[in-house]
Length: 394
Image (cartoon, rainbow, N blue to C red; front, side, top):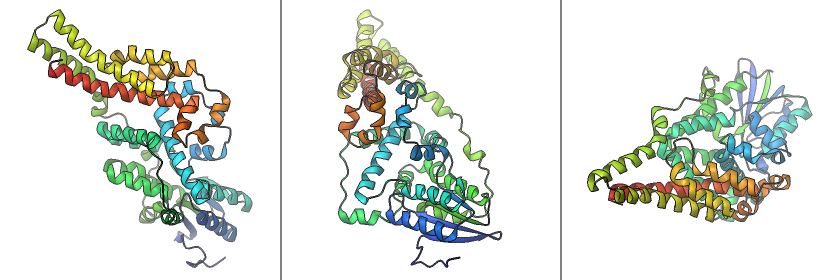
């Protein structure tokens, strides 16, 4: 067996555990150096098992080139996965832009681990918790204002200016676990999500690796996870318990009723202040209808939606904003998809088009998602304008 030295494998940590050898290769997710180290470690050690920081969902995303052409926009909307898909595409686009500047495909070091495991005849273990479970547990911990903050960040990430990095900054990124660092920055600004987003995954990863078969194991994980994994090297972990989707809390169950309650409260307030006349009721209804309709309509226009989509957004916004289970985007987006149905070719271009603002508008599939988020955003702004008018006297 090759002897490990900092010069040979500077990011590899050897752990002796119950007579077995576990080599933790801490990688940067966009680094050619990490790819080379992963390949070198596995080639030299020829381990019994290779564990990688992937779940089945992420593995399929990296290996199935045909997955985009299988996407059905109506199913995405029906299953309420529009925001999840947009967030995934926004993050993927960010990583790809960095990868292009650094000369390496995002996730290349993980795929190097998968490829080398096959070459040396090692068993492959996908050691990470399913990404959708991680995101749902994180979402559950955010709370109402945290979720709105995330949505605002998502909009800014898609429609904001592309971040330009200097040569020095790009050089520093070559040996950093950029994705994990971004996650940690996010956790600092949102302390309640640190546990599901980072801490639980440290536990899940080390537990999966400990239970992997073989006397010699190589684990390829983001460098940012290694300290937490080492800290919990011998911690008993119930992976099933940290894979449960928590039921909505009381605040989450009540939040959808906040807007209808404010609307009713505004009507009662207005009637008490001005009397229950037809003129008063008409003015209060218009105080609600106008801003919500205008907000949703402007959102649809900003998304360059089909005229029928714009009309549907305007007409449905006053009612959908009062319904706890239906958002205006759930009306507007399917109509946009119906009038400008995405083709297989559009789906195949999703990854490339998602890298630029123009691509989000040019690609019919992506534009449906843009319609979804901008009509909802516009209607939400209209809601607060309407609430202000109701309580402010119209």
